[in-house]
Length: 141
View 1 (cartoon, rainbow, N blue to C red):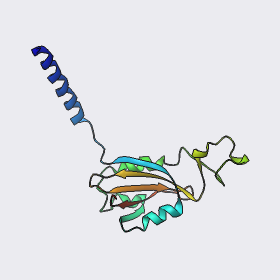
View 2 (cartoon, rainbow, N blue to C red):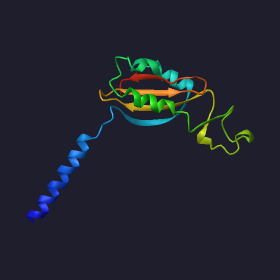
View 3 (cartoon, one colour):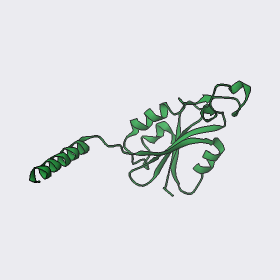
View 4 (cartoon, helix red, strand yellow):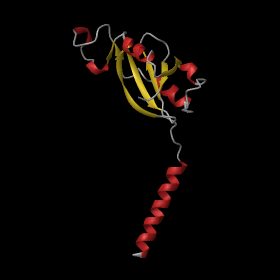
Protein backbone atom coordinates (compact mmCIF):
# COMPACT_ATOMS: atom_id res chain seq x y z
CA UNK A 1 0.00 0.00 0.00
CA UNK A 2 2.86 2.37 0.80
CA UNK A 3 4.44 1.82 -2.60
CA UNK A 4 1.13 2.60 -4.35
CA UNK A 5 0.80 5.94 -2.49
CA UNK A 6 4.37 6.77 -3.40
CA UNK A 7 3.64 6.08 -7.10
CA UNK A 8 0.46 8.18 -6.99
CA UNK A 9 2.32 11.09 -5.38
CA UNK A 10 5.07 10.82 -7.97
CA UNK A 11 2.53 10.82 -10.81
CA UNK A 12 0.75 13.87 -9.37
CA UNK A 13 4.05 15.71 -8.93
CA UNK A 14 5.05 14.95 -12.51
CA UNK A 15 1.68 16.11 -13.84
CA UNK A 16 1.91 19.35 -11.87
CA UNK A 17 5.45 19.99 -13.07
CA UNK A 18 4.38 19.59 -16.69
CA UNK A 19 1.25 21.72 -16.23
CA UNK A 20 3.09 24.55 -14.53
CA UNK A 21 5.84 24.76 -17.13
CA UNK A 22 3.57 24.88 -20.16
CA UNK A 23 2.68 28.27 -21.58
CA UNK A 24 -0.84 29.31 -20.71
CA UNK A 25 -3.01 31.38 -22.99
CA UNK A 26 -3.84 34.88 -21.85
CA UNK A 27 -7.31 34.61 -23.33
CA UNK A 28 -9.75 31.83 -24.03
CA UNK A 29 -11.94 31.56 -27.12
CA UNK A 30 -15.50 31.11 -25.90
CA UNK A 31 -17.71 31.47 -28.98
CA UNK A 32 -17.54 31.94 -32.73
CA UNK A 33 -19.96 32.24 -35.60
CA UNK A 34 -21.48 34.52 -38.22
CA UNK A 35 -23.67 37.58 -37.68
CA UNK A 36 -25.06 40.27 -39.94
CA UNK A 37 -22.71 43.25 -39.96
CA UNK A 38 -25.46 45.60 -38.76
CA UNK A 39 -25.96 43.31 -35.73
CA UNK A 40 -22.24 43.54 -34.93
CA UNK A 41 -22.38 47.34 -35.25
CA UNK A 42 -25.36 47.40 -32.88
CA UNK A 43 -23.36 45.38 -30.34
CA UNK A 44 -20.50 47.87 -30.66
CA UNK A 45 -22.73 50.76 -29.60
CA UNK A 46 -23.98 49.18 -26.37
CA UNK A 47 -23.10 50.77 -23.05
CA UNK A 48 -21.04 47.71 -22.09
CA UNK A 49 -18.48 48.44 -24.84
CA UNK A 50 -15.22 49.74 -23.37
CA UNK A 51 -13.23 50.31 -26.58
CA UNK A 52 -13.11 49.38 -30.25
CA UNK A 53 -10.89 49.67 -33.30
CA UNK A 54 -9.02 47.87 -36.04
CA UNK A 55 -6.78 44.92 -35.25
CA UNK A 56 -3.62 47.06 -35.30
CA UNK A 57 -5.08 49.22 -32.50
CA UNK A 58 -5.57 46.26 -30.17
CA UNK A 59 -1.93 46.06 -29.09
CA UNK A 60 -2.07 49.55 -27.55
CA UNK A 61 -5.66 49.38 -26.29
CA UNK A 62 -5.64 50.03 -22.52
CA UNK A 63 -8.59 47.65 -22.07
CA UNK A 64 -6.78 44.70 -23.68
CA UNK A 65 -5.51 42.70 -20.74
CA UNK A 66 -4.81 39.61 -22.81
CA UNK A 67 -1.13 40.05 -23.42
CA UNK A 68 -1.10 37.48 -26.23
CA UNK A 69 -1.53 39.91 -29.12
CA UNK A 70 0.26 37.65 -31.61
CA UNK A 71 -2.16 34.78 -30.95
CA UNK A 72 -5.08 37.10 -31.75
CA UNK A 73 -3.34 38.29 -34.94
CA UNK A 74 -2.75 34.68 -36.01
CA UNK A 75 -6.39 33.83 -35.39
CA UNK A 76 -7.56 36.94 -37.25
CA UNK A 77 -5.46 35.97 -40.27
CA UNK A 78 -7.43 32.75 -40.70
CA UNK A 79 -10.87 33.89 -39.54
CA UNK A 80 -12.34 33.80 -43.08
CA UNK A 81 -10.48 30.71 -44.28
CA UNK A 82 -13.35 28.23 -43.82
CA UNK A 83 -15.88 30.37 -45.70
CA UNK A 84 -16.69 31.01 -49.35
CA UNK A 85 -17.95 34.48 -50.24
CA UNK A 86 -21.22 34.33 -52.18
CA UNK A 87 -23.43 37.05 -53.63
CA UNK A 88 -26.52 35.65 -51.93
CA UNK A 89 -26.55 33.05 -49.22
CA UNK A 90 -28.74 30.01 -49.43
CA UNK A 91 -29.54 27.06 -51.60
CA UNK A 92 -29.19 28.69 -55.02
CA UNK A 93 -27.78 27.17 -58.21
CA UNK A 94 -24.69 29.39 -58.07
CA UNK A 95 -23.92 28.05 -54.57
CA UNK A 96 -24.04 24.39 -55.58
CA UNK A 97 -21.42 22.40 -53.72
CA UNK A 98 -20.94 25.04 -51.00
CA UNK A 99 -22.36 24.04 -47.63
CA UNK A 100 -24.80 26.64 -46.31
CA UNK A 101 -22.89 27.02 -43.04
CA UNK A 102 -19.73 27.82 -45.05
CA UNK A 103 -21.32 30.54 -47.19
CA UNK A 104 -20.58 34.16 -46.31
CA UNK A 105 -22.27 37.16 -47.89
CA UNK A 106 -20.80 40.68 -47.99
CA UNK A 107 -23.29 41.84 -45.34
CA UNK A 108 -22.11 39.23 -42.82
CA UNK A 109 -19.19 39.11 -40.42
CA UNK A 110 -17.36 36.13 -38.96
CA UNK A 111 -16.71 36.65 -35.25
CA UNK A 112 -14.79 35.13 -32.38
CA UNK A 113 -15.30 36.01 -28.73
CA UNK A 114 -12.47 35.65 -26.23
CA UNK A 115 -12.71 35.76 -22.47
CA UNK A 116 -9.92 38.00 -21.13
CA UNK A 117 -8.17 37.46 -17.78
CA UNK A 118 -9.68 40.64 -16.29
CA UNK A 119 -13.23 39.35 -16.86
CA UNK A 120 -13.94 41.39 -20.01
CA UNK A 121 -14.58 39.96 -23.48
CA UNK A 122 -12.80 40.61 -26.75
CA UNK A 123 -15.12 40.45 -29.77
CA UNK A 124 -13.01 40.00 -32.92
CA UNK A 125 -14.74 40.12 -36.31
CA UNK A 126 -14.05 40.42 -40.01
CA UNK A 127 -16.14 40.90 -43.13
CA UNK A 128 -15.17 39.82 -46.64
CA UNK A 129 -15.17 43.47 -47.77
CA UNK A 130 -12.54 44.66 -45.26
CA UNK A 131 -8.83 44.00 -45.56
CA UNK A 132 -8.37 43.66 -41.79
CA UNK A 133 -10.23 42.51 -38.72
CA UNK A 134 -11.87 44.82 -36.22
CA UNK A 135 -12.65 44.35 -32.55
CA UNK A 136 -14.36 45.73 -29.52
CA UNK A 137 -13.82 44.99 -25.86
CA UNK A 138 -16.87 44.83 -23.64
CA UNK A 139 -17.77 44.12 -20.07
CA UNK A 140 -18.91 40.55 -19.70
CA UNK A 141 -22.67 40.50 -19.27
